[in-house]
Image (tube, rainbow, N blue to C red; front, side, top):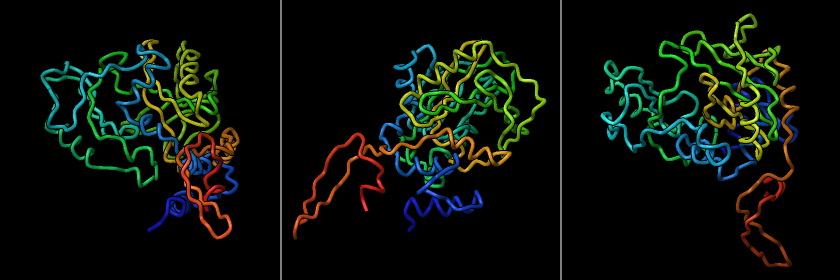
Length: 312
């Protein structure tokens, strides 16, 4: 069986068409793989849990920015439909992005049996191994119901604003649109000016008229407060009639396998991500050779240095 490093090298070669350099990573995609392997802080599991992260976020920026939870259940069959309002959103707590999301805009026409099938299928899935996004491994599989948020009932394409934060500073953000049909995304700088790059999977549309919200700077401040402790993370927010709501924290966008257009932006963005020398925060087992005796001891360390430099 492949170890994590070997697996990522093989997958990187297959998806990106080039060798993964972990000794001297330069591109954004390479550095995200490095962080997967060597920056394994246990709180990341809580941060990717769609239910558990709410308390964490409320403690940093305030409860008013967190979408209210209407219920939480261990199984789709346990959902208390009668207690839910006419409009709501169901999510699995371990899914990334839009995986495991069911939206109800009108309870009178909502097919709850189809929703149960979708959620039940997603509850049984665990995709963390595919991208080797280890924080999802130990997330408890649950379903939550959230308040439905939308600027108006007829809006089909709700924008979410995804802020790319490096050492607690927003460098740029993107806005996805046409997600249900012809998925596209445009990138913008901190001032809301269109940037000259995008993604292969959802190419930019430079002439798309997207109105930048007047409270952009508020969103940037919130994203920066939520990302203060991180070398990199993406903070996803919603903006509903200038009321900001937290969406999710993304540690590895596209699993670190996303391709940019033009492709040189992979390295340009990589330059923004400074990898630390000391990131491993777990329990390290150390073996000291003194004469003919092996002394084995266990120690808790906050900044122990790169794992590959500590343990052979």
